[in-house]
Structures are given as structure tokens and as C-alpha cells.
Amino acid sequence: MKHSAVKFDTACIHAGQAPDKLFGGVSVPIYQSSTFAFEDADQGAARFSGKDDGYKYTRIGNPTTAVLENCIAELEGGAAGLATATGMSAISTVFMTFLGAGKHAISTGSVYGPSRTLLENELGRFGVESTFVDTSDAQNVKTAIKSNTALIYIETPANPTLSITDIVAVAKIAKEAGIPLVVDNTFCSPLLQKPLKLGADIVLHSMTKFINGHSDVVAGIVVAKNLELRSKMHKVLCQMGGTIDPHQAWLVLRGVKTLALRVKSAQASAMRLAEELEKHPKVEWVKYPGLKSHPQYELAKKQMEGPGAMISFEVKGGVKAGKTVMDSVNLSTLAVSLGGIESLIQHPASMTHAGMGAVARAEAGISDGLIRFSVGCEDFEDIKADLWQALDKI
Ligand SMILES: *Cc1c(COP(=O)(O)O)cnc(C)c1O
Image 1: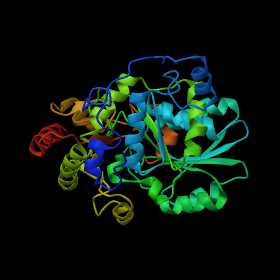
Image 2: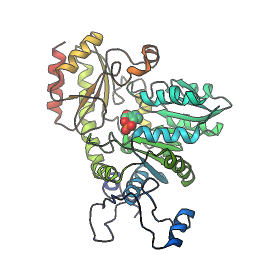
Image 3: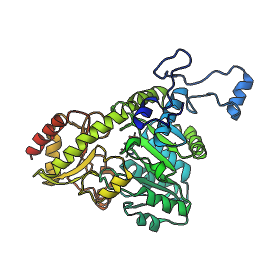
Image 4: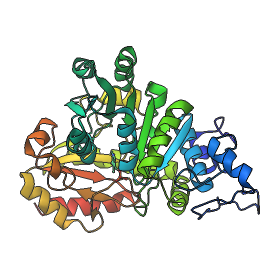
């Protein structure tokens, strides 16, 4: 059942999820089966030739997974989804589909660390070239295009600098050059940003973050604007093997039902926290798309349906002060990842972005004292009191 007529919050609960036909189960059944029986040899042959679209083998497709794919595709306004074992498996599926020896990719300088390492180090070994630019100036993307550019891969807001790329402007450049544009939408979730509607060809998520939202699953998804792109990536995913497990898909289906509730609650706290952090004497600066001080505040307002739940800030006193804060929080958890129901705090320079090296970090604007805070759904006063007592320890 298509729910495109309903509001986003409603679609989170119902999209793709009709009651089960066999027994009427309101929750989607978990088809925990690696393989599917054929009625006869002809049916088996028809499934492999594509004449019959029934299920064959879970690496290729599974009914529980298909519900999740349809649900997220609908939330993103895309034609079809392709769920994967992790966010990185969604990203590697995209890279393996569009890149190859002699091909070139352009990406955001401060893109998610492993996405950059995968392009530069791993795919670099197979003859893929990559250029990382500050995509918050769309002109930099245009300048970086070469005759062999086969992919433009952006992340906005970028991690952890929260700098914003104008999706409409980059989509225009990509379209003129005939290059597919892929957007990592993990930081926003489909509630706050719909890249396909802004002109992207493909949008992807680490569903480990906001979509699942409970820090208990790793998963990813790619949503394509048309079936042809989905089919190209599906072929690659089937050979590479980064398929999601049906139970994992079901857990994400359970998490996504509260996506709108969670993100709205966390975002409301994040907005207040960012405003108050900006006035805090121990804080050097705060980067949050909802603050007027964000260099791209107007673009954020135009492109995103809300500023989100991620805040980056720099405490006075560099790495040492940052460590003091992280060692002093009690309610917020010192952990990487983001978008969970619980508040998480981390230090990119020594954790998630340690692998990219000091030079690349400086170029990407990731300072040594930068703290990344993923605001959760705890009561605002509790989140604030905990962070403030930690800042007092500096
Ligand atoms: C976490 C994350 C990923 C990778 O996802 P995994 O599920 O950890 O593989 C990719 N992009 C962004 C922006 C992320 O935050």
C-alpha cells in the first residue's frame, strides 16, 4: 500500500507495512529463512530467469527486507530502496557500482571518515582516483570535474563540521556534466532533508543512526530515484554480499516507527542546547545549522526541514579541555555513533576522524578541541545539567 498521500509521521508507522496476509499479524513477520522452496523445477527456473519475481535466496532478496526497503524509499520519495548490512556496505555498493579503474570521484572534504578512507586507500589500490573538496562552495565541485569523473558523492551536513552543501546547486552541476549525484543523508534522516526532491539521483543512510535510532543495530540503505539505478546496485550488492539479515531489517522497521517522534524531540533540545552553549563562558564556538551564527544558516533553512540533533562545539583549552568534558559527563555516553535515543558525546580528532591524519583534518576544518554531541531524547534539563557540570570541570 502506498501512503504518499499521508503525512511523514504517519508514513513512518505505516509505509509499506500492511498487516500480514497469512495470520493478520500487525507487526511485519520476520522471514528468518536463508532460502525459499520452489513448487516445481519450472518455477525455480522462472525465478532465476526473472519471469517470476518470487524469492529465491536471502542474499538476493527477502520479504522482511523488502518491506523495509519500500518503507524507506517512500519516506525519501524515491522509486526503490536497497537495504544493506551496514551504512558502509551501502556506500561501498554505490562506489563499486559507479567507479572502476581509471574512473574519478569527487567528494566532500570532511565526509564520514571511512567513506574517505575507502575511496582514497582501498579503491585507490584498484586505480580509482578521488578528489576531496569543500563542497559547501558548489563551484569547487564544478572545478574538480575531469573527463573521467563518474561520481559526485556529498554529505550534508558534513560530519563533524556540520558545514552544508547546496544540494540543488550541486545537482545542477552534476546533471549538466551527466554525472550521478549521491547524497549521504544520515545526519538528517528523511524527516529533515529529501535529497532526491532536490535533484540527487541516489540517497543513502547509515540506518544505524537516526532511522533505527536505538543503538542496537548496524544497517544501511540506498534509495534510488528510479528502478534502473536500483537494479544496477542490486547486482553489485548480490555479488559483494553486504546484504542485511531479515531480523536486523525487522529491528529497523521497529525503530523507524518512532523516527519522527524521536527526531523532533531531540531537535527541540538541540536547538535550546546550542543557543545556551553559545553563551557559555567555557565554549569557544558552536556549530549548529539552527543558529544564526552558522555560516550557512539561510541555506540550511531553505534546504532542510529542521536543523537536526547534531551539535559540534569547541571548548576553550583545546584537546585537554575536551577530554575533561568527555571524562566528566555522567548522563551522556562517551561513544561514537549518533542518532540514538540516548545522548552521545565524542571527540572526532582522536576517535572517528583519527584515521584521516592531522593535515587532512585541518584542511577539513576538524579542530583538535572539537566535540561532537548527538542530542538524545532525555529531558532537556537533564541533558543540560549533565553537560554544564562537565564544562565546569575545565
Ligand atoms: C555511521 C555513518 C556511516 C557508516 O555507517 P555504518 O552503519 O557504521 O556502517 C556513514 N555515513 C555517516 C554520515 C555516518 O554517520
